[in-house]
Length: 344
Image (cartoon, rainbow, N blue to C red; front, side, top):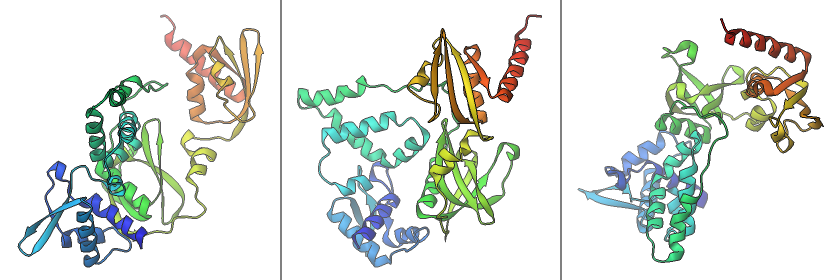
């Protein structure tokens, strides 16, 4: 019963308007209607009323009287996280939250973190409240840490926060999702489709929904920034027991783009271009040999477009020795590139 109350409390707090954002009060029947719209096993109105009264005792919500009825909203700084621990936030907790907020640079963490915005504000205020030199050290810590990406930084298309919320809720509750998707080849599409969400994956700053359809056995990938609409439907679906998102991503390598199977690869690096592979192997069976000024690396890898992009990034500092087909392919590209830059 406690587990059911915890889930219900979380959903009530998620839906209730927020005092800190100027949210208007909402009545118990209106709140109940919103819960019924998406919960698989929704509570009755009296249960919602009892949970609101309990949350008022815990200082999580506030109410006003409108005639003979009560209307409710969430107190400023309250969230699902705050409801689990109502004591004052410590400096350690404030520092952890402040650091999480600052370095959630990837899209999924940033979108998820939006639900904790009020808690982050509480953490910021806590760090600004300095009563001793020890507490001042917490405030200075945030200026002593930086994170930088190792790759070339691109500006990725933004994802609508409400759309992400609908997708992630449908994924969490295992309910059908109606989306309008506009791939590059059909940028004007307005026809909706119903999918079964199986997982979210972030690749190179782009976020994909992995989803199946009723009459299609193989999952497909949908970029969230190409969705123009996403609505969680009240119907649930049976999440396939045989599906593993980890296997889909890491073993089937679906995000490597046009995977062609395993190959035995042999590379020759010049200078220090391949030295990082000594510590970060490209395969489980990697073998490294120093040959004079060169570094030769062998290993079994999946041949894909992503592998080709990685090899091209080294320019003339890597030579593909095996497989012969890949060597010939990249040699042809090198000749075409040389011709492109040749002086007229």
